[in-house]
Amino acid sequence: MSVERAAARPEDLREDLREDLRETAPARGDVAEPLGDLRFRSLLSDAEWARLPPAVRRRFSKRLAAGGTAVYTGEVVEARMSRAGWLLAQALRLIGGPLPTGCDAGVPAVVSVTEDASVGGQVWTRVYGRRHAFPQVVHSRKLFRGPTGLEEHVRCGLGMTLKVAAEERALVFRSGRYFVGVGRWRVTLPAWATPGALTVRHIQESDDRFTFSLEVVHPRLGLLIRQVAAFRDSAA
Image (cartoon, rainbow, N blue to C red):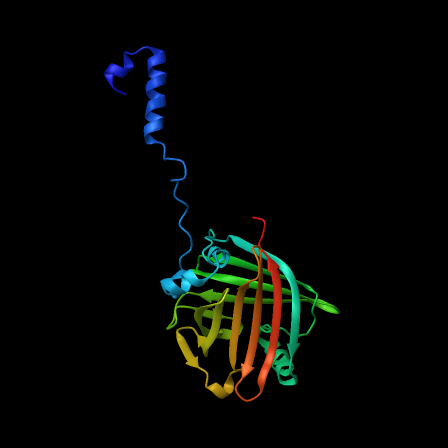
């Protein structure tokens, strides 16, 4: 505070302070929003990102603090699999069951996304209700690295690269190469040793409703697994 201001009357000081606040306060509507998470945004071109509905862009640029979690609740609305798909899902239980193991529909579904600061990625946990058994819990970790910029890892070192694209009302994740990693070593699996093409679509259905659809299609056996779950945005 200047000497001249210190010698002023109390009422003058109050008026000067109010004037200072008016000059330094940001104009209404000019307050900058917190910077969002740009990791998914960086995987798309400007044109592709602009094609997505605002709700999808907001959901995939939501910044979470370390250990912070976003939770979405809903239900499975469609689930089907071929005999080969059922056998594949049961076999993969040996590594934690990363694919749906049953065809129950109309059962609860929960997806939670947790920021994993230790690796700069996200832990995705999916819980699917089952009518005659305990719910199935699927854990995976998304890491922003590799030749496509995004990988998904499950247990026992199994993972895949993901290619990201924008479609009508949807953000789409398609499998690239499957691999098994042990420490710093990584072995790419030959095509015959993989389940085929895996596609996950995040589709905006209405203002606050969206669906996650999962499909696994084998080049010779056709559609192995298809699951669709509908969710609402969390209240938080």
